[in-house]
Image (cartoon, rainbow, N blue to C red; front, side, top):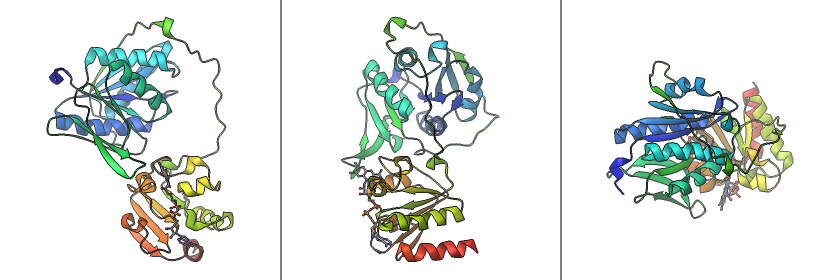
Length: 330
Ligand SMILES: Cc1cc2nc3c(=O)[nH]c(=O)nc-3n(C[C@H](O)[C@H](O)[C@H](O)COP(=O)(O)OP(=O)(O)OC[C@H]3O[C@@H](n4cnc5c(N)ncnc54)[C@H](O)[C@@H]3O)c2cc1C
């Protein structure tokens, strides 16, 4: 395989009902950095129906070229039409790198695409860089999160990677950036469309998305039971924060899974993260260590959480949290 034929860092820009998902903007920022090192262009793939107007937004966040597939077949996400559209682009354009958000859609699309392109895909990457040889270094947790493995796709192109929302940092929007928008026509093979959407039933949720919260009050096993967890609610209310937790509390049924932080939960990056009665297992750290300011309270002064904390308080959460809340109320 002649690697020099493959050029460009491509990002699949996921949109839902006309709203570009944050993960796509985060990936565009990362793609800019990688493309800068490789001296290549950032190319966005924007699929959907009536989505062309979004191209400018994609350019403002870092794309040099937007390949827009605007077709009724792509109105709602269904695997086969999306795979046909994106695979056609990848076959025709021969990118070197393809980045996809590790959302429910990306996790479905990515593997199918990599199989059709006969290349590898590294899922849930936490870091991406370029080697001296120009290969993509894709780092992700391995062996239950106890090791970080850096994977290289040496023999095949494109090099494909999925990245979870919140892992990469979003760039600033620059409305003065310019780029090219190309409309791509796809001759869909509808004989391969085996799935039809008959109805969309939206989950009723008043839940918040912890990845959007500015302050998170996160509780772990050290918080104990429902009664003591109320202390955390009180603190969160006082400082306008949201509650999140370690997996231990989710497993104990005290907190719903959508509030779990970590490798098998969500990756968060709030301004302030309170880690209360959380030991700081590597799988938890993977989801929160990029927070701007980490305040940890733990009665064990050797708890690993203190290694990532900006402010560490050794003590009992049951005593300290009410005092903290009372002081903050004042
Ligand atoms: C494949 C895999 C994926 C995983 N994914 C995740 C994940 O996404 N998120 C996640 O969180 N975990 C995950 N885990 C589990 C993880 O390994 C830990 O078991 C978990 O994070 C521990 O939660 P914890 O810190 O609340 O509990 P513990 O590790 O039991 O820690 C409790 C802490 O509270 C302190 N403490 C006790 N009482 C008090 C008190 N009164 N006051 C102050 N401190 C007190 C203790 O000193 C201790 O440090 C995963 C594990 C595996 C194998």
